[in-house]
Amino acid sequence: MSPRIVVAGYDARGTGAAAAVAREMADSIGGAVDVVVLVPSAIPGTVEAFVEEAGLAGRAERVVAYELPPGHAYSGVTVADALVDAAAGNDVSAVVLADGPFAREAAARTAVRLDGACASMCSTVEAVAGNLVSVTRPAYGGVALAHLTLKASPAVVVLAPGGASAGTATGGAAPAVERKALTVSEVAGRVTVLDETPVVKTCDLEHAKVVVSVGRGFAKPADLEIIDDLVGLLDAEVGCSRPIAEDFKWLAKEHLVGLTGATVTPDLYLALGISGQVQHLAGIKGAKIVAAVNSDGRSPILKNADYALVGDLYKVVPALTEHLRKRKANGGAGG
Amino acid sequence: MRIIVCAKHVFDSTEVRFNEDTKELLTVNVPVKISDYDRNALEAAVALKEAGDDVTVEVIMSGGQAALKTLKEAVAMGADKGYLLEGGWETAFDPMLSMRVLARAIEAIGGADLVLCGLVSEDGYNGLTPPAVAELLGVPYLAPVVNLSADDDTVTATMDLGDVLQTVRAPFPCVLGIDSSMNVPRLPTVLQVMKVKSDRVATLSLEDLGLPATALATEFSTVTLDRLESGAAPRKALIIEGSPEEAVPSLVTALEREGVLA
Ligand SMILES: Cc1cc2nc3c(=O)[nH]c(=O)nc-3n(C[C@H](O)[C@H](O)[C@H](O)COP(=O)(O)OP(=O)(O)OC[C@H]3O[C@@H](n4cnc5c(N)ncnc54)[C@H](O)[C@@H]3O)c2cc1C
Image (cartoon, rainbow over all chains, first blue to last red; front, top):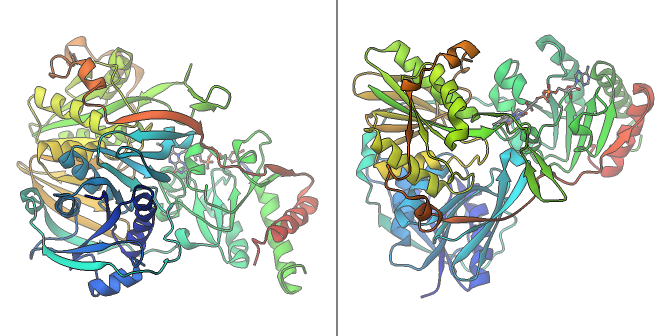
């Protein structure tokens, strides 16, 4: 029986990214990829449309669409129920989940039920000999990167948030779609949903090309206004460090960048008055270029930026804004 | 209502450094503390105690003898009793191991209506141990909790699922993962910590839990740490000198050359 990698994600994007990782693992051990989806709650359209959107052709051999019984929704328990069912009777070497709502609960429950090992925030995942899986993930908030071997099988891994990109679909054979009624664990029925309030997002850090991020170098909330024109000129989204969002609450939590907040992958990340502690840096590893303005010549951000300007942000921000305004008036790049 | 809070004794993660030469974490003289989010879990538990009648809060602290002061700090936040778990098995990377010890410890002290945990730990940041405990105990797991209330036999919690705030109700028992944005943990004074009498702290040995240390290291261990490398992303680290008037044009030129300015 050939080894299998079982995949789950909250949405098409995550599922596609997890399937891409699983494909590489499966290829290296001569295995196959099964993708688990829950219908109807996780999928707005048809399963076929989901398979298309997630780019599963060439990545998965089989998609199992589990039909949720009435009254049940996508949850940590129901996803675990589906993963465990898909694993039953197969030689499963790994379960790969995209991070997202309920992912870590689903992973933990699956690992307990299958008597496996479990890790989250994995930036690399590889299948190695003898059903072992090796991963890299942060230690101590990102101070170090740990190389781990998950020796209990199956290895249940949750990918790093925002880290895995789905890449471009490789094409290839469409997976076989199988439909199955999901048998839901009793414990799922104990939770009653009373209310769901959509969170109205005012920023989209994850997809931003430019992020201007503010830290404790700003003395008071009103001072944040000095970045407004800069943000407009750069067509940027606004990020911030933890004190700004959580301690002072000058900006909503959705602006928080770092371990506790968003993982961003812009072309340019401009850190203003941010010291560059590892927990903040954890969220900007995927930025192409990091530029920083900091008044302290010994601040850790200087070593962790590509370009750093040592100076008072209250002077640098207006000068930078003015320079970019003139540049724009002169016709932009190279002007 | 009986509440158990699971808490972890850790090095202050903002002060831990990595030694490039020895490939080790530098923890000598680094301050120790209650893991960040566990303080939010303790605060949430104490707030429930203050809001209700007949609520007890007990803390299970991992970290062994070295964690005694950390446990007293946790108790001083307003818990009734603290349990110090025998040390030697702790791990940042093996949630399946931590989960076994914690679930046994919870059972050993009589179980709870609500088990409150920090959403993630400061050293491992896995967020897997609390839901694994819930699975082993066969109960619901609610997380990341940003709002919480309880009556005699049910809990109502609001979870921040990113694009939606979902409020749910569940009967006891339940495991909850508390988010750092839920509250601002109180800081006990030195005097309050000193006043935690020894009869409010007890020790739980691994033997008591039926988990001999040797078995933990062998049959219950699911992960090995092969090596560590620096977590820093490689960056150019170029400092642009001069007054703002001089430095700003240089910065803009550099960014244009990188192709990151539209
Ligand atoms: C478990 C855990 C998780 C965490 N998660 C996150 C996270 O997700 N995101 C996050 O950001 N943090 C996180 N933190 C907190 C993190 O460790 C730092 O405390 C935080 O990032 C510091 O924010 P800051 O850089 O704004 O403030 P500070 O460290 O105080 O730095 C302020 C900087 O501004 C500079 N400055 C001051 N005045 C000026 C001026 N006039 N002009 C220019 N520069 C000036 C100073 O030199 C200094 O470098 C976490 C911590 C823990 C323990």
